[in-house]
Amino acid sequence: MASKVTFEADKKDNQIPHDTWLTQQVNAALDRMENGLSVFVPNEEANAQMADFKAEIRAKSKLL
Image (cartoon, rainbow, N blue to C red):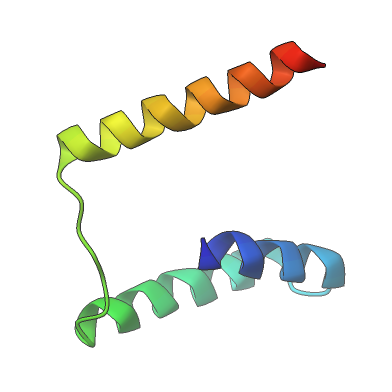
């Protein structure tokens, strides 16, 4: 979720070009991986999480 917060903060500033922002995000992810702070999720679990996320979004849009 931290990436979403970072993206929204950068989006508000809108002074950082997208390629610079993307480079910063990739570098931050690689730093977390090198420092052992990353959590890797098996493909099956990632697919299940994405399916749940999509179902939640679709349910919200039906309420509108």
